[in-house]
Image (cartoon, rainbow, N blue to C red; front, side, top):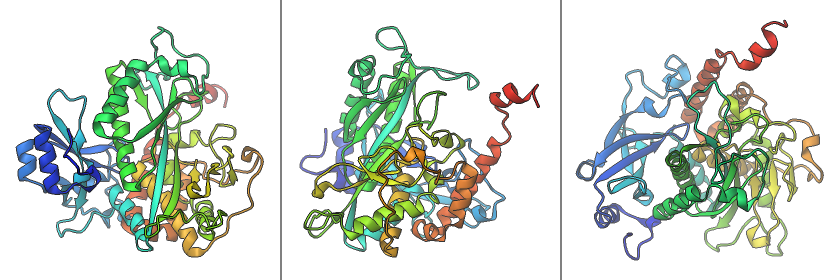
Length: 460
């Protein structure tokens, strides 16, 4: 049950309280997305939540590696996170409230923003970074519009990280052994799971659209309706949580790893994007005569120039780069083309009013807030610098050279060297993010893989 005649996107604190009353909420999950997109926070009784809107959390909780470590000795990290570990004040965003549909008791979840004790936003947190980039468009009277397409795998439960992942058993009692791209029957194998997913998404008011079976065995894709960047990042954050929870309830895992299985394609998060003039409501990627505008060309060129330096945000783990391989259903360069799925930046067939660019570089493992922030930041830099795109790639871009970083280490270096992205995203965020990613990479380099034991143990 929702507050009558009021869109949740315009909820105030009073609307939030009314909504909690109407839905008879007894517990609140107070969530904050961290650098990895993991939900951190606290669970509060309704009364405590209402009484204390400014709950606190140690600032380094939102600046940890994926395995829970902290780069405490790094100077860049320490320039932002104090050695005495100050508290951040968490405040709910009323527009993000929704039910937790799988909870046994009436439970709500609300995404929070993090602030310093002086009331300023914690500039290194993902929502703050995205807000910062959106503001650059707002200042020009423009509104970015995005639509994510999120791929993921369903896999059989596997509690042993040393064992390879396998496709799950469907209704037929069999697992997929071949690729069944766009197969309706392959999706129907998991009808009970997806019926729950759609019911949960409806209860949460997530604007999910199309569900398809992707190329890989057990690989699916969900598309979101286009809309405001922050709202779509919130919805993607919620959907990942919902999909993982639903899969567990059906005896399997849902994974958003970029490359979870050998011999299968990786998973992406393609983001469609366009720009609207807020005063006229017109898509400014098109001229009045329907031709591509200068702003469109500048935006596209900005993606081409700056996405390699932003790769550490959209391919944030060592595993991410296993997806970026030639003929692997993922781009290896920054070429662009009309209706060309081999390039980094595809221009889908559309009317002038719907002209947009699809960023195909981003992995499913990326934080949705940071992914949307970096792609919008690259486009804005292209506009500011009045860049021009390269000639269109009309053939397969897989035959061309690599133009994207091929490892996390290389990507971190490029991000550290890009002063333009530092200005766009904020120096504090860059300091924290690169410090965290360097520590993750160092931890990975301590691991000896089965490949190394297989081919090096007795042969070198």
